[in-house]
Length: 222
Image (cartoon, rainbow, N blue to C red; front, side):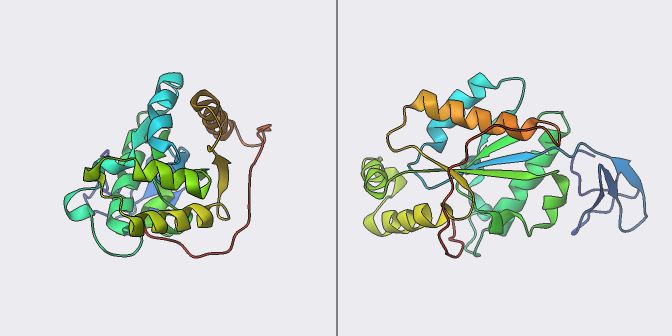
């Protein structure tokens, strides 16, 4: 079964999948079967910082090595729930990414997300690790970019203020890269280096600069 929650022996669908290294275990019948447990890369950050612009360029540069996906394509229908953290939406993406991983290439998921929205989910066991990198920008730069978006994207001032709060908060939660005055090619090169560092075998040195900040805060919804 490509849906890793479903046991290929008895057909049970696990609500709490069990992984023993690179082996899945059915909690009902005890059947064990191998799977590819690859790392997942979450390219996160506030809207307007550059994720959707970087994504296509990254896909072109890393074709054959990773699969680059845009998170918002599944932001539709019942998945647009109002539960804090949007667990149904997040879980759907984890299942999708894990299924794609069975083809042998890791996924780079571009979209606004934070570790507290992914790490507690049952589907997290399908991944060797989840690497997070947030693209961020100076508040006034973000505000200007979001105001310039077309009307159908519905960026009013209240929503912009909320996103600026996330921009400030996420800097203290994960590695981040400020795109304010950085050319697109340089941003893409940095993200590519981050991904390739995460693809290295355990123990290999990444040699990657880290731009971190520590800012207290609580997880914001998407």
